[in-house]
Length: 497
Image (cartoon, rainbow, N blue to C red):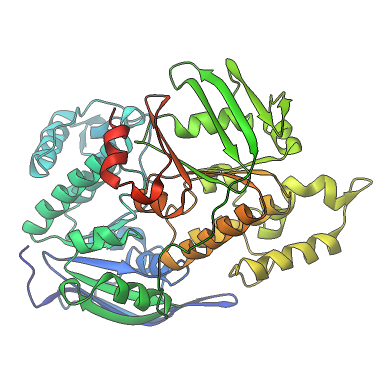
């Protein structure tokens, strides 16, 4: 690292309010050249709003931004980019049909007589990837790239704009462990060249590996900024949630009962191959493996989202004929999808509308929704799940990731399903909200529900599961019954086949 004492970026007294919500209340942040500054806080703490102010998507109500001591007049994404700021959001801004080269220079093409200087772009793109020490085919359409490769394209795009400040929002959320290591190498290469990085992540182990300092926000306010070398994990969690968290995983008495869900010889093409397993009453069964192992594809077959080619599904001794999600829901099976934004919620609808969607039959009479009943039920879940919303008409797309996940949880809990499938239930969620979801899983298990939890976070798997199944290339290749004695290394050995 070549971090200097003089700040590259200063944000002072930043304030931003929305109707009914004070998102930022006098936030201070500074970033040095060649430094990785971790920006942490619970969902709804103000991280995304602060970054959107820096990126020009929001105009602050008060405060100032200085880069190299000068006010760059950031009032739009274009002016932010011109000031040397690049924000790489969780949802990439790439055009799938365009090639790597075309995406990098989109909007900054140089042409003569309507002909784009593609040869010059090719040379410049190659120089960018050489700078990152990464080889990639510049003519490949971005839709054919892995998530990790798309991320590198976003970084190259930022460098093509001469960005000196790069914000990475949850960059490792969908990456494998090897891809995370590659990302860290890129980050270290960038900081060695004097680029300042703001790194947002809920994976605390990454913070201690990659960051120089950590800035913590809570409820729209700046809590503290510390050198990572001067704090430990327990102190960092306390700064984020405002209280001591004795354990990241709540204890519970586990005594699984009779078999409830039985899956036999489930198959679909090369994605899912002859999968068989069972889940007992009161059991949390964790299914893990590398990204692409077939975990999500397998539970989509159980839920009827995809048509299975062979296999049987049995619940409480009764064989189910599941051909669609509606069949699964009627049978008492629900699925909390991995991607809550595109598959779990209708973002342009209100939170109460989203809650009611899978419950319309019960909440309506003669084709009319009983609004009072819906409001009363939803209010109960808002209270019990501690969902932070200004009102029931808040758009789902305007919530933090943790509160979005709680809305998805609420709508399925209202169905009183007997089998609950959680696909990456805590992805992109802060440590405090994770703990609340873990408590909920324990309560559901105590009620005799059958719980399937898909997770890529091995500490979560070891901390929550009664039993672990490991998948590799569409098959279950390992089962761990003695979870208390299991290690991450043991799971990874199975996962890589």
